[in-house]
Length: 120
Image 1: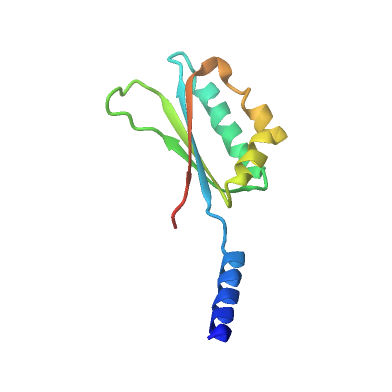
Image 2: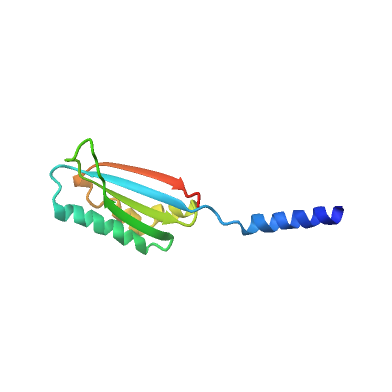
């Protein structure tokens, strides 16, 4: 009996040690001011795209938000995927991100961010 318990214990440790951390999704929504030009918005879009060069970024997608309550509201959504939650801090402290957060501040009416762990 002790032998089987020992085997189960060792298997449990091995499974725990090999378990991967959950991936994290970081989603940012930017609301642009009404006077933001297409060229200015493209500069922000390009700046977000540039953040994909940061090694901890494992996935990226973006698009234009669909707002059924206010069709005049101009919003873009940017989503980054990280292998683990701690990578978000590395990303946030990177020189690329620090430079990025200053881009387009004068045409940004609002910024929101949501982070969540992926279940799959």
